[in-house]
Image (cartoon, rainbow, N blue to C red; front, top):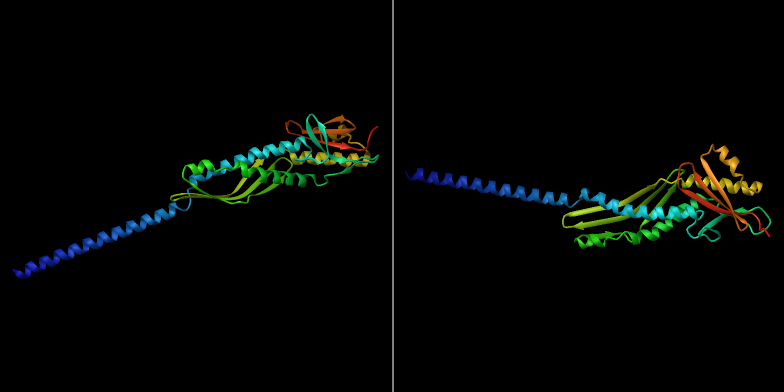
Length: 256
């Protein structure tokens, strides 16, 4: 009788031990799983990446449109050193001389010059446009690089702007990281620059840019208007059915 009772107590202790071990095992699993989930959550919240990209790229779009339009009005320069006023625009001389000779080409690498102009303009203005103050007010910590780097590629039909700007946004277990932003401007800046350089070359070699034969050779793709302004010429270039225009000035000799 005593042995039977003792064996019963031992059995109860064994069962209780198994239950305790099982509880400890489940608790250990749940704690590890919770920690794993937290670590996974702390990597990235991809759902928040697109609004971040949209915000930064909206600044690129705004100031990029601004500078590309400025280059069109001012002959490819943000701050022309030598220019002719035309309807309140400082139209840069792409070809100029003050003597009784053919003008010389002042911007032989016009496309490269404009790429540098866009780059400098954006690097100066984007840092004021991109403002994370409102994000900070929602309790996020912002770690943004002091340096931002813009690269620009001008093609015939569009201009592509890429921005390298490392940004990290943190809040509790959420981390958002991004460093590459891009915007494409569907403006024929490169093609119109080629037309302008063709005109400059013709003016240097033969003394004038014969616009009508040029337009006929290009089958009406290019539309060219020429205006005489105080001894200079201002050319306004468009592609057919495209509202974007590029204007530049030339001066081949000083008229009395």
